[in-house]
Amino acid sequence: MTTIPILFMGLLALPSPWLARRFGRHGVLLVFLMLLFVSMSARTFAPNVSMPLLTTAGEGAGIAMAGTRHSACNLHNGTLNGDEIVNAFIKLRKQSGVLSSLLLVSIAMTASFPLASMATFAETVSQPSPGKDAVPDDYFHTGAGARYLRRADADLVVEPLRGNITVLMGSGGNITVLSGKEGKFLVDAGIIKSQEKVQAALDKISPAPMKYMVNTHWHWDHTDGNAWMHAAGATIVAQKNTLRHLTETTHVNAWNWTFDPVPAGARPTLIVDNKKTFIFDGTRIEVENFGRGHTDGDLWIYCKQADVLALGDTFWNGFYPYIDNEDGGDINGAIEWANKAVAVTTDHTIVIPGHGAVGTRAQLIEFRDMLVAVRNNVTALKKQGKSLDEIIAAKPTAAFDAKWGNFVFNGSQFTKMVYDGLQ
Ligand SMILES: [Zn+2]
Image 1 (cartoon, rainbow, N blue to C red):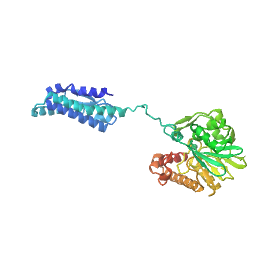
Image 2: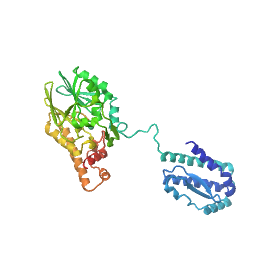
Image 3: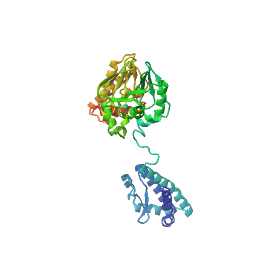
């Protein structure tokens, strides 16, 4: 890049003595001032100009900007009338006193610097090339996965609830642990990056071995730890569509990422279609699917005696949720799941979300009401024939953004998710 300023300085300085002989000292000054003006105009009207190419034409008076990548710059190309400029120079020469050639060269050098730096800058902005600092825009570099990986650097938050149930937060989605004499029954596996921290937290709860681990759905932040938990003794339980997603190559456009099939040891082996009841350590655990929701393979886990309901990602406490439209989820299904959860809970129930703090039925209702309101707003705008961009611009989430739009997704992103689910 440094060759460009030098080239410009040379180009501008070289013809100075000739121009001075031909048109007088002030003529040269005028030439450089005009060059400066033309270049600045080119920068204004053609911001992606690559490099102004300087030419002299005819009797040495024609100046044109050429060789740009932007058509707007052609406004300057050849539109300067050579005869007019010659006349101006002659007039100036008659009126001028004497300026030293040294001064002219100095002016030429001074004028060349902004020209050269503009050309350099213009080349930079016109040719964005991925440098070593460029970050790809995908799930694990800029998306939710990157967020969970960063969060896993910090300590887990361990929150004991009632009935020997504990929640571990900070390893992807929330992990729920029911610990008894018979062993441990877990909900979700978190991410493998925090394996040691999760293992340490489990050991601290009790020495009882892992017996079961239920995946609430297939997403990475809930299943990445499957392999080590299985190796540690857990039977992996999941809905049949979760098994399918984990067994197939799954590309998610919204995340710009393709997930490979997980190894055999990370795959669920105890499959739930609609419902399965476990009697574990003397308590009743109901594992259930209600069709499309956050994905097409969600399960909720309800510990009856303790009255604790783990909802996976069908509940995000205080945040706009992700809805995986590409893998069987949609907004109406998400609302149905929330309605089912509201119906089965009371004010006594502890409601564990996939993301966010341990919640209450009141918070679940607030979540459900937000989903319904946004769905209705987007539907109404869609019925008016508005496009997705127009609907986003109309801000159908405006009343909710301050409270719900501060985690992974903002109002615009959630609006798109809702809209996509209404197709
Ligand atoms: Zn999820």
